[in-house]
Image (cartoon, rainbow, N blue to C red; front, top):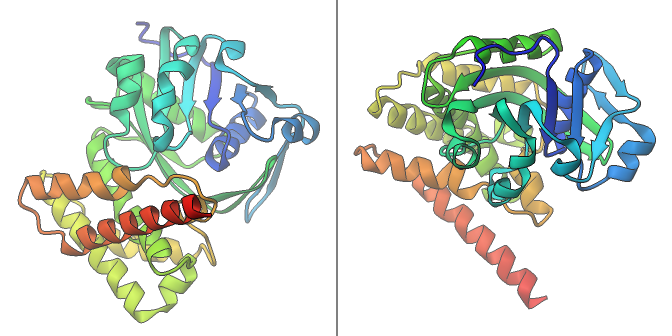
Length: 318
């Protein structure tokens, strides 16, 4: 595998939801050669392009390169996996047509254990993971609203960040994304759970509430903090030190999001699968394997499992 990364790589976006469209549009507007796999809303994107609205600007990619299959896209230098982790069963079909000898694969998925399915298909040495601290939602097939652009951190799967990992991070920086490369991807994953566990979970468990409701309700806000502390303590059992100040930072960031509907809530309400095991189940299992007490996290996991099962049962009865 080549150790260099091209200055203008051929990029595939696999999964054109809110994150895929947002980051793909930013890269395209920066002059990169971006190819979108679009399975839903392709006609709208072909006709109107991709529109992105942020608090500071509006972006419009007028003629994006869109495709119905990865076979049509062909081999790329960088593949960005932006499908939900619940769809990883499709990777064995989606990824191979995109892979050449030097292709890198970057997954934007949430939760623990999400790099492994990608590595099984692509090979571990070419896999990277990204943590996206962002509040972003798809408001139409061709449109994305980003309330909080936030930051992105990238790490190499199973190894410290190397030259090519830093080159991919630099690619996003040139596209206007606050992004850096870090050496410990596992720690980065646990850090992202500090926000995802409480806010994605409580949004569903509390009956379908947005982040501003959680922030304003004393009980929900306190529970969110306790869940965060359990995640931090569990990470510590693995030798991953997350400072308590990081918990405070999550509340500061969330206060800027307004009435944001976390992605898991949007998926749940739309009848789609949520990343139940990746965001809640796997952290519970890993925490218990090292003797970490996570009673609130475990309770939230079982509540969410019940809600998902009840929803599915209701759909079958109808």
